[in-house]
Length: 396
Figure 1 (tube, one colour):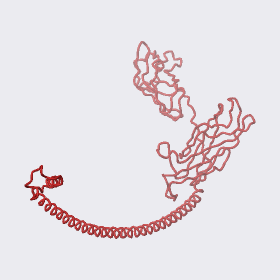
Figure 2 (tube, rainbow, N blue to C red):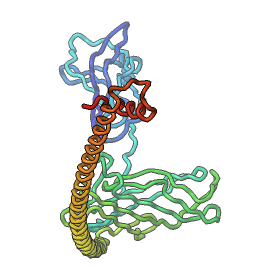
Figure 3 (cartoon, rainbow, N blue to C red):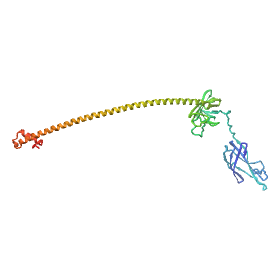
Figure 4 (cartoon, rainbow, N blue to C red):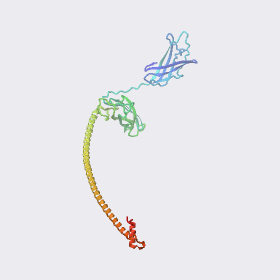
């Protein structure tokens, strides 16, 4: 069913006749770009000659087989027709010579909500710029106020809500200055955003630096902002930068509710800083390597000197041990010679002593062998006992 906004589709299932009434069974789908808030439509029956048979108007009073739908329908949404809404009374008797050959459904009236007009930026940002515009401060409640803004990104630093890992790449912080009932007031954005999408609208809350009553009248006079870009991926070939890097940019005010951040203008400074940082890092590395080489050479020389000292100590110690061993060997030889001499002399002395004792005991034996014990003198008795103890009485 055509309308000035587009088509509204009747999803026809059937018409059921019962007790003098008919009921339309089916649904309605909104194929227009607008929301439908109310809809009136009718069904018309035509005979074989193309004439309206006026099946709902038996008395020719202008009645129509009309239906009214008050359910709100969003774009692309469908809804079933309520049986009470779909009832209509075809009470006219159709003459036998007439035959219904065609049915037509058409819209009588439809009300739509207007499509919001998307604002457009009045210029095309240059390559390497990010523009935050259409910055709005909505109704205020206490110390909070709604924040909305749009963003267009003309840089290669891309991230999105659906691209994990890039949420911290572009961060924008906004600040607004104004007054509430004549007193200075400052609004600060409640959070940061990573938003590269073109002309996308964002909502959040502002926070104020002082409490605001709900009925306070406030006015925003100026808006400022800063942008921090931390790049670690999604680079364009035209941006020859070492990763990672960081860019801090202060927004340039275009008008009362728009800021522009010249990202690419900061690239030469970042490149120069990266070159300087690399030169400084290379110099520091070279100096450190030189220091390390000097320390390594000192360590090598010290180790060689210590090795020489250790070798000399080892040679001296070996010579000392050899000398001590030779001296000990000499002492042992001398000791052995003395011991051998002592043993020989002692053995000779012992042999002489035994010879003398044997000779003496032989004499005592010969002088006492024929005597009775009682006839022995005390001296002779002692001499006999001594020789017996030595096993030389009788002598062997």
